[in-house]
Length: 167
Image 1: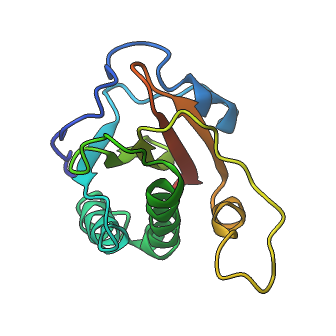
Image 2: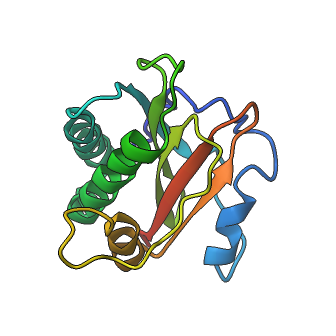
C-alpha cells in the first residue's frame, strides 16, 4: 500500500503527544505506527446537503486509504454525526461556512470519524421515542462503531467521534 499524503489537519498538533490518548484504551497494545496518522478534513456548510458531502468525502478518502470495505458503516456514522452537529451544535453568530468540519483519521488499527462544531454542550443519548422521526443518532453510532465519544476543543467547541477497528 502506498502512503497517502498528509492532508489538512484539524488544528490539533499531530506531533503533540497525548492529543489522541483517548484512543489508547481501544487497543490492548500501544500504537506502533512510526509516522503520524493519516488525516483528511473538510469544512462543511451548515445545510441539508452536508451529510451527503460528508459521505462523498468519506467514500473518496476510504478508497484512497484502501479501506473501502468500511464505507457502509462509516457513511452511516458520518451522516449521523453531521446531522447532529447541524441540529444541536450550531449557534447564532457562527460563520456557517466554517462552523462544521469532518475529520477522518487513519491509524494502523483504527479509523476515526469525527465532526467538530462550535457548541460546548456534550452530546447525550436519550431514550428514543419510537414514533418520533429523530433521536436515534447516537444509538445508531453506538451500535455500528467500536467506540464513540466526544472531546472539547481548545478555543471552544467540541469534536464528536466514532472509532472502527480496521486491523
